[in-house]
Structures are given as C-alpha cells and as structure tokens.
Length: 224
Image (cartoon, rainbow, N blue to C red; front, top):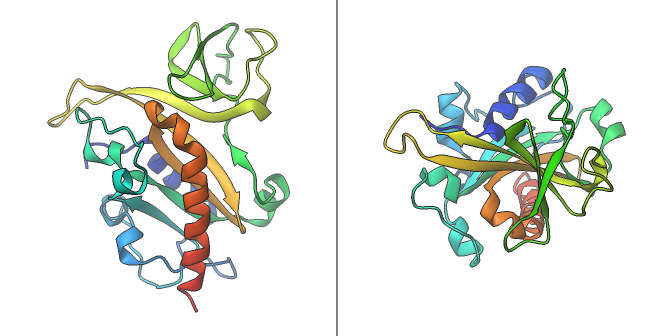
C-alpha cells in the first residue's frame, strides 16, 4: 500500500506494546470480515487467525452511505473517503487513565521534545463548531478544539477533540496531492477506538462516535 494514515502507524505501536492480536485474558470482539481492514493488516504482516480478538483494524467501505453529509474528496485515495481506524482492548494501566465514555485526543502535546509551540494561529473550522489551532512555527500539524484557548500560547488538553497533520503523498497516482488527516479517540466498554478522517468531516465526529459505540456492542454479540 502506498498510503497509510497516521492512525495505522499508531496501531503498529499499540501492537508492539500490547503484544499479539489475541492477548491472553484481554476482552475480545468478533468483528465480521466485512468490517475488518484486511488490506492494511496484510500490508503490516498481520491477519485475524482467530474469531475473537482483542485488537484489529476496521474499515467501512460504505461510509458515504452511512453518513449522508460525509464529504468525499475525489482527489485523494479511496481510504480517505472511508471511516477507518483501530480498536484495542485497554490494559490495566490504560483503564486507570481513560474512563469509559471518554473521547478526545490521546496525544495532546504534539509540539513537545524541544519544539513546544510559543504561539497558536486560531481559525474556525468550516461547517463545524470547532477551532483549528496551528503552531506558528509548525503549520503542518494542528489541533481541533471545542473552545477558544484563554491565550494563544496555552491550550487546555481537555478542549482538544482531534490532532491533525498535513501530509503530501509522495508516490502513486495521487502523488503531489495533500490531505489533512485528523485522528480522534474514544473509550467504550473497555476498548480504545481510534479513527482517522479528513478535516472537512470534523462536524461528523459525534456521529462517528455514536456509530462506533454501536459497533462495539455488535462485535461483542457476534462472539456469543
């Protein structure tokens, strides 16, 4: 595959930390084949060898049908127009940090490590009740906020809804085009769900969350 959004790279890290897809004693789900992102998992050398798994990649090819107001960007790869991400059972440490029902961004300090942001450039997100905060010295990354910060150099992590990054595709038929990939996370019934979407679809975050919450329940029932 020539294009893998940030959320899939994060999934590799999660698997390295947690171990195999079917971790012992971890809560499990039984997703149907049509909900599994088999292409991405194969590209990463992974496969679902068991019906019940504790983590996997998901993709919904009919996203534009499920969400009538979903904005399709024809100039970008098909994956950007499909709701996709990963599900992973929380370990004991994560359960202490993330309460059930939480949603937001897991990595709020994206300008850490010697590159802290001194000033944010703020602007409303078109079509959504959100604010985009870009760092003046690093415009390639941004945060989506649900309220304006008290000052332009300090942001309350609790107001961060998603983290976005501008990516330029370097190879393939879409070479040279840019996308603004955003990542949002939520915790439902002991599972961390993290998914990717384009910034123009920010207004649908609430709908995405409700849909995936329902899917967690469905995937649990399939194990019975």
